[in-house]
Length: 246
Image (cartoon, rainbow, N blue to C red):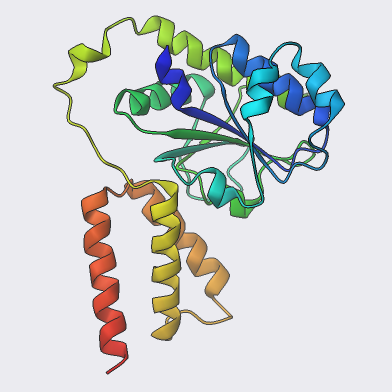
């Protein structure tokens, strides 16, 4: 069950502090304990503490960030909850499939983040661009609205069930190839380098910048870049920068 410690529950722009406390309680009940808060509107709050109902330790350890990229900086795999893809080319899975992928990554020693957007409208397009997968709950199409804390509880339940179903000792899996994927911090540093280089070459301009940067993020997220591959990409970009200065 220690693999569950590698799953980071990230709440973005949470409006109601009670949902933060209820989410802390939801993950603790299922054996998770990592909670990150990005720009919560009202936190810390007595209401959050009250709704935690004994999960005060999870709240006390919760990290608060002003930028999403900082909250997911150590994650090699990022999932985002969304009822639709909004036309973005991001693979969409259900929560059970997501739990399998998350625990498989945890078995490899990777850090995983699961993003939950603001209560009223969920993840923004920009936040979704940070995700390798989008997670859709198979809710009633006539009434798909799901409370934030309830969504967290369902995710935590599926993750715990995946752990319970997989009783094989991790030590027996040492023959599996270990893949060293880039974490969020390395990817954001790469994107900054890539986009600045593209601007320097004239490939990006104000007319196409938003569309092109989104498409490049989606493309590289689907590739699941390994660290040695990133070294090659950064080396190439550095060579381009060097030649541009000649």
